[in-house]
Length: 127
Image (tube, rainbow, N blue to C red):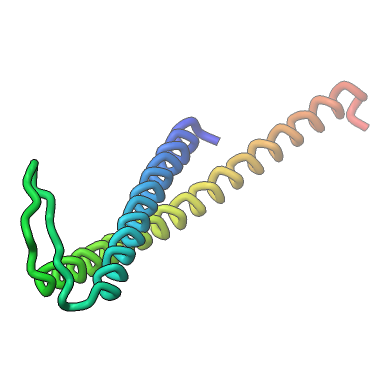
């Protein structure tokens, strides 16, 4: 097993953790925006909505607000799907590398066992 393989495996693991964290953040944003959408749906079309811009509260048109929330949800869903594809790809890459490392370890154990057997046979007189 080479140090390069282990370093690559650790790097993949770190990248996978980061991708999962990013996906989690998008999932949280999706949940928050879905809650906003539900609130807007409950309030109806005659609701008065304000947006905080700096120190000011500005009145917003409910249709524009609904449209913005929908667009945000679509964007977030796209980012979640992209993150999930990246996670899956990295998991597959990590799985292949882990299999490669296991194979290298198996080969090393076999060679060590053969060497130990040879030493034993030489020490015991070749019988």
